[in-house]
Length: 167
Image 1: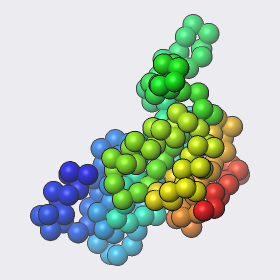
Image 2: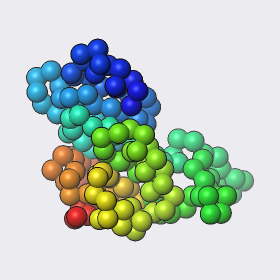
Image 3: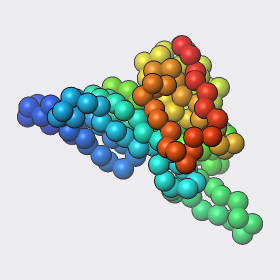
């Protein structure tokens, strides 16, 4: 947010700020079209699809890049559930949150990853100030109605089940 604010204060009206899982789109592309931001498939590490967005922050949380495996091959992610002190096991493998402030998106993407689909849906229906795209451990996609016309699945994943969460 501070980098984005600094750039805007210097007169920048079109840019992408990428800090790993945190992306901030300042305005739209110079030609006026939306930025295309790829959402990674957490297991295959290729593009699940593209979000077409302008003037927002996009933050993804997941446990597919930072984890360790035990001697039996069970994977333990780096995001901890504060109620247990153990790695989160909410049924979600990737959470992408879209909103105006990167810090809010970052906090919510981690919180939703820990709390799971139901809590994310409840938050969205109560506050509605963000949008999100969730990928479950069953390889299903849940996205909010604000993203349904802004997300395009890659050809590789066209048969993946996708569900829209309405306000």
